[in-house]
Length: 189
Image (cartoon, rainbow, N blue to C red; front, side, top):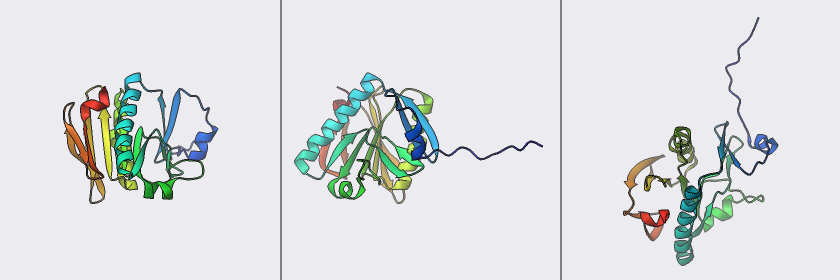
């Protein structure tokens, strides 16, 4: 008699450590599901750098926190991601940074820059949106370097909700970042 198992494989942080650390691949786990992506497009990386620059220029002036590109966030053994950019307050950074240099809790702001392809888009707009929402991220930006847009999600009650889609010449502000103002065009130059 053959038995069929309906349990799906659940990946963990320790499983990633056993995988080849190929520099051309990025491994993330969301709810035990493994996601493997290739190195991003040049313009994707340029967008990340520009966003990080704008946030860090503001952070140096305000002294409230800092931005980093592709930090590791280990929420749990089955939720281990590398968002494109995060901004975290000094208070949370002290609490959430582990000895290995990874965040173990939610930064206030997470930003994902879309990579081409429906699977990549679904991961950022569905799986990661749910994960960041459940972990307490206050604001989530999904950036498209191809369309030159920024979708802004903000926490309402217990969930991140889409509150605006900004276009190339629009101004981006955030209650998380007092007096931060940036024309979206600056992310794509």
